[in-house]
Image (cartoon, rainbow, N blue to C red; front, side, top):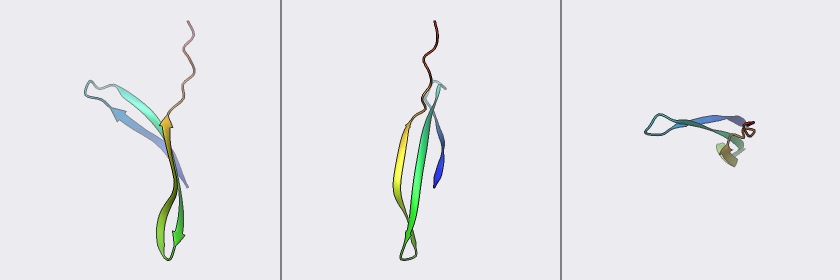
Length: 48
């Protein structure tokens, strides 16, 4: 299993984070991805 964050940068230099998870299994000597999920990192709403 592997978990972490991607960082994406747009043309203006703005960065956004996304969390990812991969799960792997081995079948007949080959490593295969059995699960992949990615979503934007949750940030609590800013207080006014």
